[in-house]
Amino acid sequence: MDGDAEGVWSPDIEQSFQEALAIYPPCGRRKIILSDEGKMYGRNELIARYIKLRTGKTRTRKQVSSHIQVLARKKVREYQAGIKDQASKDKALQSMAALSSAQIVSASVMKSQLTHMPQPPYAPPPRFWPGPIPGQPGPSQDIKPFAQSPYPNLPPPVPTPITSYDPLPTPLPPAATAVPVWQDRTIASSKLRMLEYSAFMEVQRDPDTYSKHLFVHIGQTNPSYSDPLLEAVDIRQIYDKFPEKKGGLKELYEKGPQNSFFLVKFWADLNSSGIQDGPGSFYGVSSQYSSSENMTITVSTKVCSFGKQVVEKVETEYARMEGGRYLYRIHRSPMCEYMINFIHKLRHLPEKYMMNSVLENFTILQVVTNRETQETLLCIAFVFEVSTSEHGAQYHVYRLVKD
Image (cartoon, rainbow, N blue to C red; front, top):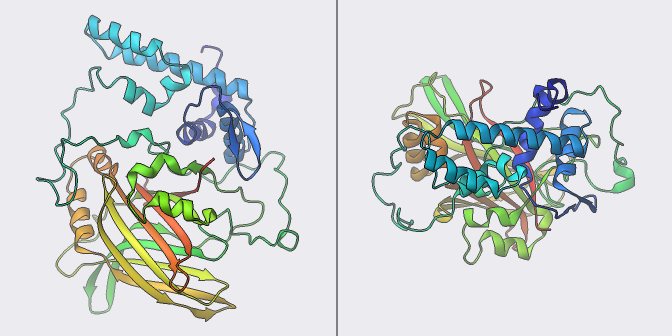
């Protein structure tokens, strides 16, 4: 067992460990500063900390290091076993000899280092689009692979953490901090909070009955001060997935305020077999926001392919006072023709790995601004994979930072 007892790495710990590997890419001997704590951590310390937050179980930095080494040896053995040609095997070993255990375990690093090695014996997926889309790069252009980013292989969120451990110290109550409970725990800046977001298909069965299928969905939550703060992702990791010209993600972030920027990873539910799509189907998007201020908001939604904007929708919404707060509702906004066609083509691909291959280069950027002052209230970068869960669509939220 290489000194790595199964009891130490039970399924819930292993799942959190794999999540953390994807969130924190190998960084050598450099330390990472968590801006909400101001402390410096090595990568293995961050992984141990993440496991504690997710499962409530303690794993030391040395245990994490040992586990990475065990997995690296296992991965090397598996990779060798899959190569029959001795010359290719020698070349692969030579390439892997230059990698650390952390880099070998990191799928993105392995992929970039060993792209010249023999690939799995299935045919490459067909091109998604039969021809180039106007205004988008063709196949010959240099496109950076999405696998370089830190989050594409994140598994869906784990179940509610097990609480049979000494709880972490509870943050101070609202009266002592003046920071709302939802800030740093949900998609919320100091001025605006996203309450709900969904993209869906609706089919009318008869004059009084509608069937609804949710492709993606963020539901309302009621966070408490004992809930962990959102994990952070470096915004520079995703710059190339979004427009870089004037008004692009980089310029927006530099303009700030920087507590308004979030990354949402969606596992989209494309399995709508229970609903028959047809000419009468309605594809729509609904969203809801709240604020303590009465203002007019502008919501820009940009659909991007290979980092280039394909289509943009701009909507204006006015406040309505409800329950002592101002609410902004965009209800059943029709989905654009490009998105409807994209979903149709995606759902007709025969394998999920083909769908994910397409989604690697598909992103959406939503920017909510105050119409009068042009201040950025929320900026949300959406990235996608196909859900494999029987529970349908899932999501995970991260803060975007630049350390």
